[in-house]
Each structure stands twice: as C-alpha cells, then as structure tokens.
Amino acid sequence: MRRIVVVEDNPADAKVLRVAMHRTDPSIELILLEDGEKALEFFGDAKRPYCALVLLDLNLPIVSGFEVLKHLKSDSVLKTVPVVALSGSSNPDDIERCYQLGANSYLCK
Image 1 (tube, rainbow, N blue to C red):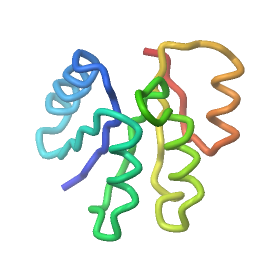
Image 2: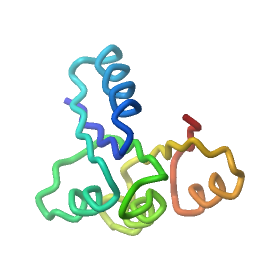
Image 3: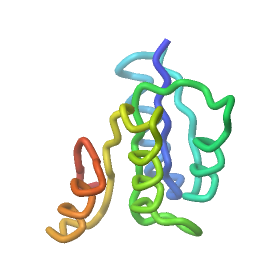
Image 4: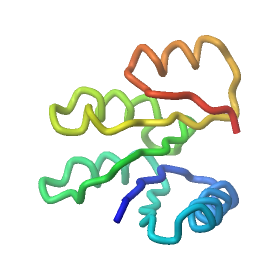
C-alpha cells in the first residue's frame, strides 16, 4: 500500500486531491493534515508511519508550508521523501525558494 500525506487547509482542494487519488488507485492511503503545525507534529512523531509522497500547500495557517518543507528536508529520515509543493502562486521567488529548500516539484493550483 502506498501512503500519501496531504497538507492542505482548503477542504475543497483536499477533496479534489482525495477524489483524484482514489480514481487513480483506490489502494492509495491518504493522510490529510489541515495546517503546518499538525504536519510538524505528524512528522515529528518518532512512530510516524512511512509515506511515499508529501503534497504540501504553501499557504498554510499557523506554520507555513515553507517551514514544513524546511523541516522535512533537514530531517535525516524524511529528506528522501519526495515533496510536491502546491500553491496558487506562480511567483518566481516562491518557486525558487521551494526548490532551494529541497522541493522535488512545484505545481500551481
């Protein structure tokens, strides 16, 4: 089974991702985290479950997606997990910042 962690505060965007993943492969397990703080707690847990991919919104409440990305890519275990940054911004500075922090891809919503 493949597990994908989605960090997304917009319920409509989360639903679109959930439906698309289910249609692609019903065996994919999605874990939805609604803000950056919950993501840091999830990934900071010593017993965190393995995940194959992180889909990370950048504009998150409490802790930004940039901070979550920075945490993921600075962790010796998590740095190998692919992270796709999702954003409504097509600002070249945001895109460049994501890649500098270690994002594997950047998609505009």
